[in-house]
Image (cartoon, rainbow, N blue to C red; front, side):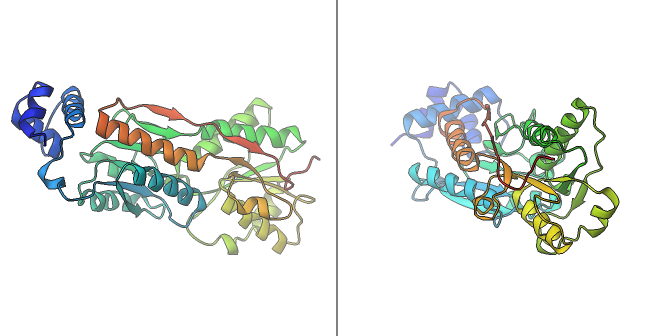
Length: 322
């Protein structure tokens, strides 16, 4: 069995430095962290605190009930199972104030690393702490956390809006969960603004609602009478389904009276009649990619990378040409 002394010798550092890196209880340069982790991986070293204990990774998601995050989480668990790691799960309920406490709870189990989907990485207090190897999932990378697995949400917003414009729609409404709770939704809205500007059209102000509840009770009466959109883009598919239900309660038909499109490509969108027009995000493959990247960073001292995964426009029956 390899010893800490052997790890320190191979990494070319002191015993104290090797201990600080492996136990994450003191300062060390990024270069030294990579050297020590690589030496430990090559020697098969495990700290005393890990002996007889299954290593774990921590995962933070906004909601465990959203099929998007459930799909990513399932892929993460499958990848970690093969690697012999358990998975600890925390959720923020799209609440930025809860993220720091959720991450602190994950850190209590001294995880090998973290996979985090935060509301907004530029403002998240969860990212202010000293963290083990960390991969952002669905969030763009930051200077402090350059490892990320994303899809181009702004490009996706531009593409779905351009598709609607190409079918003759000019009054297009973007309806979203609160932008403060999801930088993904905000980026999709910015893509919508891009498409409207490129086509010389005046955008409508976004309508924002809470992410976590009320989709089945969504009331669009005032919105439809005051804005009269011919098409609505919802920031995710669950919200798009809520929009379709709300329009039906107003006596409106989809797509005959109003066209509706969403984002994510969840399975239930294919089961409704007509099937939902949406941007299909590769949630399962993104989760597996994030897990593999994290393991590579934590166990092989691989450099942090930003990996962008392609999305697909799926044309359903909820959009008609006018």
